[in-house]
Length: 194
Image: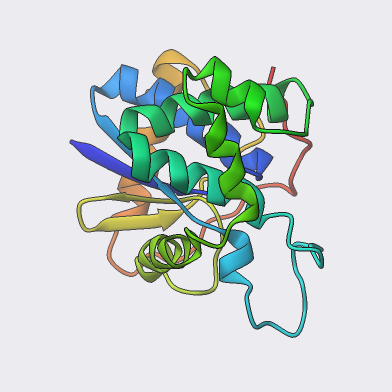
């Protein structure tokens, strides 16, 4: 089985979901394919700014991630996401791409993509692909397994081992039920990414 995830690397809840997916993949033996989903691209042209990003800083990470994917492939993208997310979301060290690129064994010059619009069309296309699977009313992450696609789950704690596998099983069951639209839990808690 292959599970595709569309992610915005700036979102801490998406980071938690991605770590859960790695746990679930180990518990249920499936492969993950990684794709960029840009909240900046998703919100282009809106009168409001749901991400409160008037300067466009959310473009920078997705540009670097797209450069990594296009120049170095899936494995490098996954490795870079782990390095970037660990430093940014788990350790709270925002700023710069050179450190995570070095940790991932990638060339430092990829950081230059942050300030270039070279990858913006590819970012918009990947975002449209992910959003097109569930509709424009959502954000990041989007997960698809075959014909089943869904937003989330939005989690603030990362289940491990068999707990991750059980959440995976339940999520696929619920999302794959014809006519299913939405399931929500308690209000968001601050993410615990330790």
